[in-house]
Amino acid sequence: MAAGSLLFACILTWLSWTGRAWCMGPYRALRDEGLGKGKTPHLDLPKSLMRRWGQYAPWIPAQAYKALPEGCVVSQVNLLQRHGARYPTEGSGKLYKAAVDKLIAVDKYKAEELEFLNKFKYDMGTDDLLPFGAAHQPIGFYHASGKKIQPSINLVIPEAMGSNTTLDDDMCPNSKLNDGDEQSDQWLNIFVPKITKRLNAAAPGANLTDHDTVSLMSMCPFHTLVSEKPSPFCFLFSEDEFDDYQYYNDLNKFYGNGYGAPLGPVQASATSTELLARLTNTSVHDHTQTNRTLDRTPETFPLGRPFYADFTHDNELNSIYAALGLFPQTLLPGRVLDPRAI
Ligand SMILES: *[C@@H]1O[C@H](CO)[C@@H](O)[C@H](O)[C@H]1NC(C)=O
Ligand SMILES: *[C@@H]1O[C@H](CO)[C@@H](O)[C@H](O)[C@H]1NC(C)=O
Ligand SMILES: *[C@@H]1O[C@H](CO)[C@@H](O)[C@H](O)[C@H]1NC(C)=O
Ligand SMILES: *[C@@H]1O[C@H](CO)[C@@H](O)[C@H](O)[C@H]1NC(C)=O
Image (cartoon, rainbow, N blue to C red; front, side, top):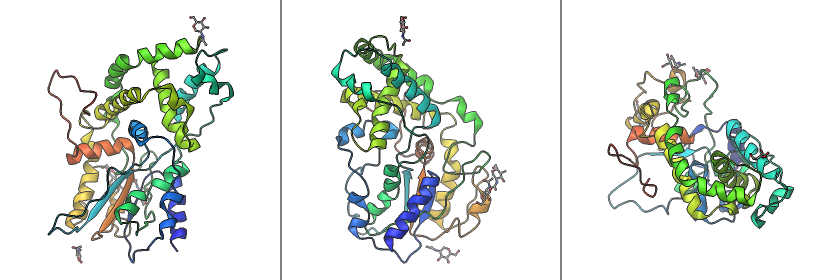
């Protein structure tokens, strides 16, 4: 029964953020109440705000699925999604906690919006997928199928040191020389100081730095997704400021993994060869980061399926876009990126 397979998918996705699913047929029909509204809590925040959360935005449908142009048939679908909402990574979590603790240490706030900190304690976990994110993981697939098909995760690819995987970007040490921080920090120095000044005036003695301010902005998405209700951190900033925050995150991905990273696209060359194999129904030809054992085994890399779903990380997603030429972004030498255009 579908509820059982959903549970199975969720348990597996909890263990790892990334994985693959493909249609095994016969398709299992799902009753509407099996997934969808009941399983994915509403966050009670405007979508316009959640869309400004950069890579931390939860899954939001881009638009309604449109009928195919006349005369076209779909021969294969390859769906690629971020794994779903998770706790902050260990490194980011430490920075967020440090910034929150600076605010908590303040004796007397000068702004009502900060009063919640009198009773606040930072207690978020690290790294693991959230129940909210797990509920979203197969949902794009579910919507794409007109709410009929609910896949279970067929394969979870290990990501431990030394593992070959096409759904993560950890295999090329030299690529880490460009992490995008230099470029996103340039933008941080433009949009953050006035916010830091405002917060420090409202929280005398907190001595927040500009990076602390960005951490506090990140508390809005993370704390909201963890608590499944609007976080009071969201109300410390305006939507325009989240627009600038979104651009900060975009720059970091663009120059860290995407078109602006010298070794960005190459990190998805193996993903491209796997996609080609599926599209052409021929075996994978790759000399980079594929796991040859997995890819030559029909049970772990089946060909000839009509529908594949892959779940990956935000960094690798940006490398994949750049490798496949999706959402192209180019910049003329000497030009500054337009904050509203990326
Ligand atoms: C390749 O996949 C197999 C099967 O899952 C696994 O046992 C092996 O450790 C993987 N090798 C690498 C280098 O990732
Ligand atoms: C903030 O800076 C002031 C002045 O430099 C210093 O006296 C105070 O101890 C600092 N507060 C914290 C929480 O670090
Ligand atoms: C993992 O990738 C390396 C580098 O391309 C390759 O030498 C090795 O054979 C691969 N291992 C597996 C199990 O695919
Ligand atoms: C894929 O190729 C195999 C033979 O290698 C063939 O049996 C199968 O029908 C092909 N599938 C599709 C969808 O073309």
